[in-house]
Length: 75
Image 1: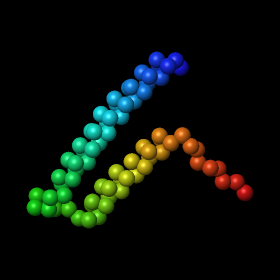
Image 2: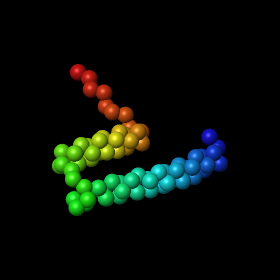
Image 3: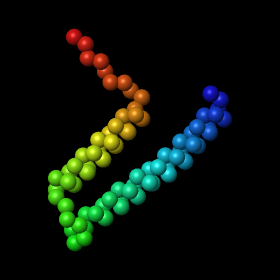
């Protein structure tokens, strides 16, 4: 890949990653509005379930960015 091609890929990544990260952060803020007990009724188990799935998805996404492979265990 040429330097120009790499620069374009880098610029595209920066633009998209910033926009998508801001969307995620806004969605998390919007979700946090549901924490107002005077407006909503929820159980701790439901909150745990919500954050468990968010954390799992975040972990899976982060793994995709890692270039290192897991070590194969051998006996």
